[in-house]
Amino acid sequence: MIKFFCFFVLFFGIIEAKEKQICKEKKKYDLCICAVLNNDSEYLLEWIEHHRLVGVDHFYLYNNGRDDFVRQALKPLIKKDVVTLIPWKQKASFNEIENGFVWALSTQIPAYENATYLRGTAETKWLICLDLNEYLIPIGTNNVNHILEKYANYSGLLLVSDCFDHYMEAKKSIFKPELCKGFSWPPYQSKFQNDCEVVKISPSELRINRYFYPGPSALKRKACQEILNLENYEIESLEFLP
Image (tube, rainbow, N blue to C red):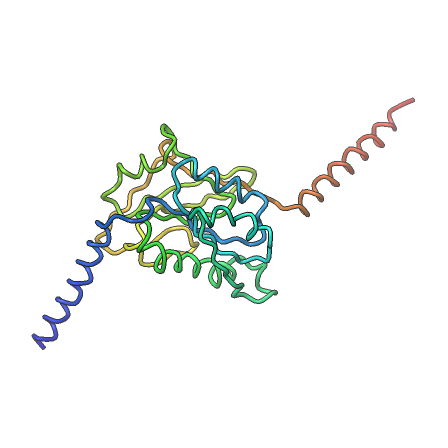
């Protein structure tokens, strides 16, 4: 029994030592983003360029759609080692795709875990999982890494997003992949070991701007509705004419 206990302590002591060693090692990237693509490539290049300008080194993009434009548009960035494009099959059935919960649990979270454990742990110091309508906005500096340097001793930074065009508050984390033990539901916050410290960042220092993209069909419906409202107003207004 004593031998087993000693082996147990030694085994987990070695694991903890290796995790600390990984944390101290110089990584290939300082900050990476993980995102799942789902035929929503309209703003993809602008989204990537914005984040490159604020200090993001690399993007793990999981291609869940069938958009050939994505592969063609990203070729130059893949060659420059700015993007890693990973084919990512839809895990939910066709009828389940509309259910956001099913899609997130079957497709989105596994992509986050793949980026965290199989790629991020060895390659990047910090990682954040974003949607394509979410933008990191550093305040008081033009580089997110300047802010991350202030919190180098923390395992993760909790951010609150400001949502435009649609009310929805989402909390997400910039975290050190080797210290992440999973994701909470909704899949925005990372879970860490008990002894890991996470700090909440003020929106006045670093925030996420989140925009609601209704999609072409919704925009067409809105435009048609506005035209109908205008025509109805004109018809009704004629009744008051002599």
